[in-house]
Each structure stands twice: as C-alpha cells, then as structure tokens.
Image (cartoon, rainbow, N blue to C red):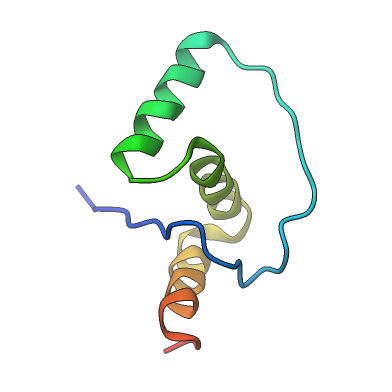
Length: 75
C-alpha cells in the first residue's frame, strides 16, 4: 500500500485559504476524519483541505504541490 505524505500547515502554493465551506457529517465519519488526521500528524481541517485539493487536482497535482512547498519549485 502506498504511503501518503501530507504537509503540515504551511503556506499553500494555491494561494491564501480564505474561503470556508461547512458540511454536516455523521458522527462516525467525523471521528474517522479526526483519527486519520491525527495519524497523518495534521489537524482535521488541514487533512480535509488536503483530500479536497487531491480530489480536485488529482494525486500528481498534490505531489507537485507538496514538492513545491518543500523545495520552493517543481522538480
């Protein structure tokens, strides 16, 4: 199984995160999101943001964004 690495709260290469979205979830899903975020060493908000961005730009896009965060440019 592939290990997924997520960046901790750092400036986003997508720009400032200034818009909010509110969703209602079943308690079990919220609990699972918290567990997964904790396992990744992230806040629940940061974890949800990462999986939403991955859904929108695809896995390769997320890998490029994380690389830009770490190294300052795409490699």
